[in-house]
Image (cartoon, rainbow, N blue to C red; front, side, top):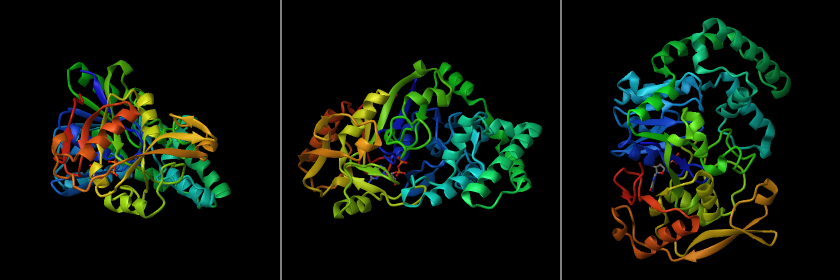
Length: 429
Ligand code: GDP
């Protein structure tokens, strides 16, 4: 059976944590294939809230193997902190349930420092990064100067690579970013601790995932962030530093693309975005504040308030096209209760021209005029609905209209944060 990929279709924060946790019940392996601890998932199980930044969201199901693939950048401090927190609550009881790719890149203290200093110097024109060193770590990966998880275990080579990097970064930090230099010895001794603590988890994860598929196991590939944050196809430069599309799952997990079967697109029933950058359907008003309050739209990683707005079908239609989405997991429909009428952006107008798909330049993004369609709202709360028939007619019509506008069926509908507040409408594996 081929793997299933779950990706975000908007600007991230679509409720991936809940959905991946739910689907992980039917999976043997859950694999993250890109990004780092800039992604934050909030999971609510038995009323208890867990925030995960690095470990795949399958971890709350004992026995699931959680894999961190070669496409990721990993901050060992954060990972080990997360492991400790999970263990304290009884999760991850067996070391074999967490696998970390020896090819994933390490986020070092200088990456975090550079990230934050640059954002500070950009002032009002900042990108809105999480300041966790993700971008600078990916820069080093592409510049072929990065240090990978597996390098920790070649002590001689590691020492040399770290010394070279610290020398270079200290020059940059002092001369251009007005920061204090880092101590090589301090960094090196931290890394020695990391090496020993990470040892039981480090593996050739691509080989393990391929072997699992060959043995008929179910593999779920968990994307982070969303399509509009993709480094190539998003609202560049207000994007993340990796590819977020289903197409990148193969490389980041170490699989041939033909072993990817279904693609599920995580989609929120309205739109949010955290950080700076274009957002055509933004509601910078009381209605936006209401969505933020009712949807609890604050960053899981940073606590930053998210910008909120109407559902943008252009964005999700583009995600369906780019990733070949077979089915949507539509979340947070319950948050729209009481808003009447509802609006949905069906197309854009840019300088008088009609567009069904997003533009490719930042300049064009800033000139978008959204074209809206109005739909009737509903007043009933949806948290108890367990089938489509339990939904008020207006809510059903809203879901059907969204599906038609973006060109993909809804296979899963979420009406609350709890696992059971879910309506299953189609197959995921
Ligand atoms: P993620 O990174 O995509 O998982 O997004 P977040 O961490 O922002 O998760 C979204 C938040 O919404 C979490 O607090 C979830 O518990 C919650 N959530 C997920 N699905 C639903 C839903 O259908 N309705 C409501 N009201 N909350 C949800």
